[in-house]
Image (cartoon, rainbow, N blue to C red; front, side, top):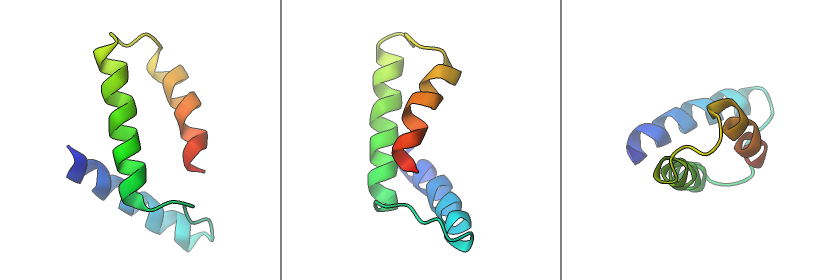
Length: 62
């Protein structure tokens, strides 16, 4: 799962870089953090809607 997520983030990072908006942290940290957050969300029984959850975590990666 981590490798798939890292591939997606790497693709996204390349697109952002082409637009002059690079991530501030390495892709591996973003992938690990995202995997951990989503794992917690699932283990807790998805206490927040997917939309709300995404709105809360997305700004961390801008």
